[in-house]
Length: 253
Image (cartoon, rainbow, N blue to C red):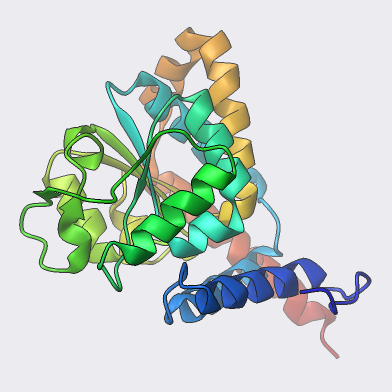
């Protein structure tokens, strides 16, 4: 991670790749983690590797859902944990909501424990999911296992880098799902109650800021939730990408 030139045009992206690989070797990130990260990078490039204007409203609506929930939970996997540990902890404290470790691969409790310890090293105090005793109904994968005091008891779940089957199963279980997904056409992004089409390292600090602002103005959250249109939100993202591609095409020799 130390030999990436600071003046490289994509230095931050290369640093994140290196972080994913480092923690994969340490057992926090699954072997498939770099593949998932690379897929997200491709979509982030279409967005210009920045938080686009139309997503700001989605972040505000997501914050409103989190602060108005009876019980919110932040579900994290290895990739999210190692890329944004401080942001996860700050958001958790601001809502407040526990963090629940939930992984697809290698559910032996060893990787979950490593992720939980890593988050605690970055200040987390309420980390669940190490020994899950409940299951998401009608979900066959290992991700069906959830904490009885976390996702099982929650009415709102924040997920990132999520698989579509689990998102659908959580919704069918009566949960509202906020996803952070760079692919606006993924099953997760399309099915989630609200999708934030942004990179998790950018979205989480913005989400925390919005949560703090809504705590100070709770009446605004109801207006945000009432006015939200999921289809309009997705179309705005797709239109942004389409326009950006047209601009890029015009600049290529």
